[in-house]
Image 1 (cartoon, rainbow, N blue to C red):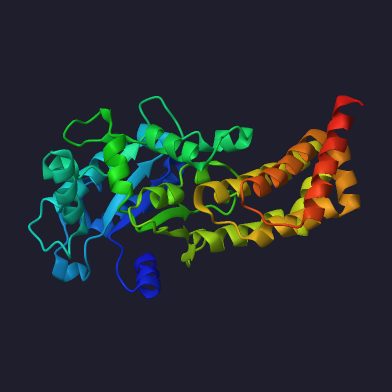
Image 2: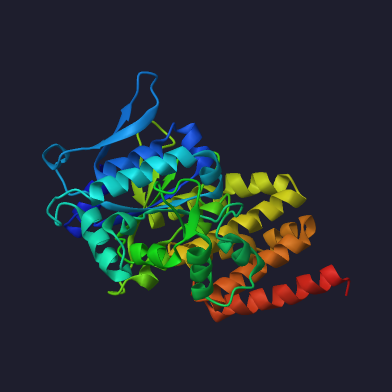
Amino acid sequence: DRLLERQVAEEGEYPESIAFVLWGTDNIKTYGESLAQVLWMVGVRPLPDSLGRVNQIEAIPLEELGRPRVDVVVTCSGVFRDLFINQMNLLDRAVKLVAELDEPLDQNFVRKHALEQAEEFGVSVRDAATRVFSNAAGSYSANVGLAIENGGWEGEQQLQEQFTSRKGFAFNADRPGILDDKADMFKSSLKKVDVTFQNLDSSEISLTDVSHYFDSDPTKVVGSLRTDGKKPSSFVADTTTANGQVRTLSETVRLDARTKLLNPKFYEGMLKSGYEGTREITKRLRNTMGWSATAGAVDNFVYEDANDVFIADEEMQKRLLETNPNAFRDMVTTFLEANGRGYWETSEENLDRLRQLYAEVDDKIEGL
């Protein structure tokens, strides 16, 4: 509800479609929080049996729902696919159920989009209402994080193509156990998305601790597919406390940077641990750039302040170089790459310093 309320407050209308990312271990910890969110968006109620197992569903009447049914595009992690195939079945049945309801299209965006796609692909409305996607069997992640970590990607289009090709395998409740390559249907559904959304349920693992979050984020994919060129709104639900909050992705990345990467308590603690601590700081900076590449969600000041902390301070340079010269070289490379790819605007003085540092660190590593 808070997600919809914020979107209505900012855009003046309900979103027609929301892209969700579902994680395996997160749903274990939260007892299916993300599943409930997806069902609520499409306006479907789970029905537990006498033992509390949820195998049946029913559509919530529009009068009771009090708003339009919002379409969804669900991207499941490989672990979620392995652990929760029955829940994927439930979600697919829920979407198909509401797509086949005889309701006004301005009150049922699932049916509206399914009818459009049925005509586009020449299939039934039921088959067009395909909204639950994941990797092919035995495959995991979009490998976007790996490409960004290695720095060998040519451009954002390459990352977006990786995402749609690796995550475009559809679950079909009418053919359980089979994941068909439906990349075209996946892209057709994504181009109708108005909002991208993820849950953050652990205070131990944040958006830049790991690459998984940005690896599966479809924000720029949606922006590139939409015919109107509009960038979707991006939100993150912070349910790490009882008082859950919905923030924009940019707000969440900003908060994460202030509490971790740019926080003296964090980086001083990392530096005390020596070699691995310096590598951890560099990894966090690289993961921060990942959010620039996949969502454009990093403010320029994050890079600028990080440069002031780790590069402009000569004493800090010395500490990083002494504890882990390879990680420090990777840090310098990340700053230069962020500028080269257009994610960070800075002075020529800063860039000259970085180039000089890279040469010096490289010489030291090579023993010259």
